[in-house]
Amino acid sequence: MEQNKEKLNNDSLLRGGNIVHLIYPLGNEFITFRSSIQNLTEQQIHLEILKNSPPFNIFKVGDQVILLFLNDNEIYKYVSRTTILEFNEKISTIKTAKPADLEIGLRRRSYRCEVNLPFSFYCCRTQYSGRVFNLSETGLWAAITEKPTKLKVGETLLAGITFPIANTQPVLFDGKVIRLQEPYQNFPLGLALSFEKLKSEDQKLIIKYIFQRQRELLSEMSE
Image (cartoon, rainbow, N blue to C red):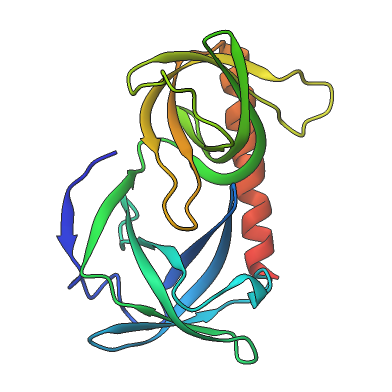
């Protein structure tokens, strides 16, 4: 993950009507709300939550959320953490603090999408569990219920993902730990892995599932 930062003065990102994904950490899960920019002030972003989003009753003023922006040429996603200032469930709007800067998040060198899949890994002869919430053909990000005390960035783990595809066994692979996320407010404990040893047939299954999931998400957005 690149750590470069850019000031939040890019008109193409903050143009009215642009789509923004508001990602709300809830326990060990991430709930995604698809929204559009309704209005912008010097200190706030006003968002309209689009149809088929989860219910608002999980929100509290002061909660930390992630805003995910995409630039015009769709090469970079820009990520920023911010705070919910106000929300109105009746008219499906949310106001958040305007972030001072944006972090360049995921460079689209590979297909990637939001998922919710059972996940497990082994460390020090112990099995740990979690859920994969971001998956690409080269790696994943998962929320985990517990972190082994000896787990470090750079370590290689045996891990597995279970896909909701008939007649398939869990995909097992060696994954290199590239990032560890400590719990912060309502953000869960998590880790990012890159696939180090992945069978050709398993990589094909992952790519197949990613395309299937992307079609599902596009269908949901168009309803």
